[in-house]
Image (cartoon, rainbow, N blue to C red; front, side, top):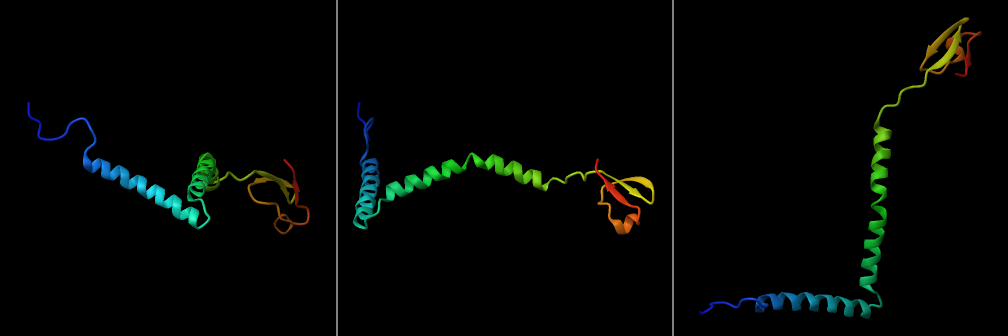
Length: 105
């Protein structure tokens, strides 16, 4: 049985890709050490900080949703000219007259 191509092992093309990637990582490390920096540690710290912020994303989404939803105004009990009035606005002395007062619920 004659085979036209190599089967079951790494081809020359995949070896070139593998060694090119390895060479790039080693050169990045050597250049970072030459500039007295550790790019790998900085990259790892950036990844960890990003992962630490991810659990806050659902909480932030919920908080934003709550802020965008209209809130029901509190009903206040006021006395205007001697009559009890329920309103969602503040009881102001100018609107309530001299006898107008705001009473807590």
